[in-house]
Structure formats: structure tokens, C-alpha cells
Length: 170
Image 1: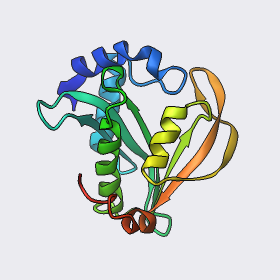
Image 2: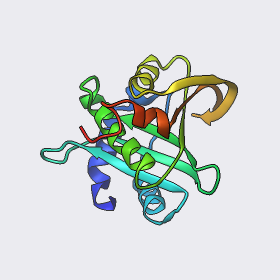
Image 3: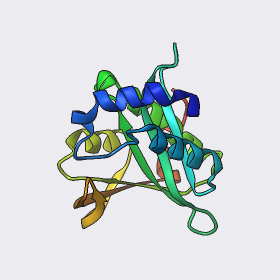
Image 4: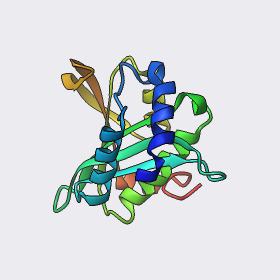
């Protein structure tokens, strides 16, 4: 992943208007390398780049954080796409692959995505993946220097497996 730094940072810069105020992806080499190192070494974090099948261009990034094993077997999902690829279903396809990995190889039971209520595109995306709204958390996460409200969306392994078009690689 470290070798993708220049391409990733270029896409982040081009997507600044799309990302704000929803997310603040790594915006410099140090932050990107920190993300890549964490993805490579942490048992509680799984980070990946979502890339085109043909050519390998980066279209976004996704991660599972605070992965907890044992009786909980849960994680938080974070993601963002790049502006030049928006609206093409690529993040949906990439997240389906990640969720298949989470519920398969990683053996997780529940994935939670926290989305700011005004971020309609992201809410539509999690709904399309089968997530269900579980609640509302005022001032839940500090993004861009401000505490922001979030809706809590979750998907359980049995829901994922019960839907034939999900849980399998497209």
C-alpha cells in the first residue's frame, strides 16, 4: 500500500469538496504512511484501497477499525470514494468485497457504520449494502475539529448471508 501514496494523495486533493465535512482522509505523506503501517501491523484495524479490477486505479479506501474478537466479534466500517469515480457503483462493489472478507475470513458478527445525517449519499450506500439504522448519536465523532451527530447503521453476519446478492464476490 505504501507504494500507492502519490496516487492516493492526488485523488484526496481532487476530492476535497466531496469529502468535507464528512471525512478527513490522510492528506500528506506522513499521514498516508501512518495509515498504511497501521493497516499492515494492527490486529484491531484492517485498511484497504478499493481499486478498479482493470488497471488497478484507486477509487477509494475503506477500513474496519476497533476490531474486537471473542464474544463481541464486531468492528466499525469507515470508507470514502474519490470524486472522479463517484456515482458509478464502484464503492458499493468494493465494500461488498470487504464485507464478505469481514464476515468470512475475519469471522466477524456485526459491522457498524456511523454516518452524519446530512450525508445522503453515504446513507444510501449503507442501505444498499443491507445495513439497518439502529439509532442516533449526538456529537458522536470529532471530524474537522467539530463534534458531529451521527446515525448508527449496522449489519450482522446472518443478515449478510441471508441476502443472495450480498456476501458473494460480484
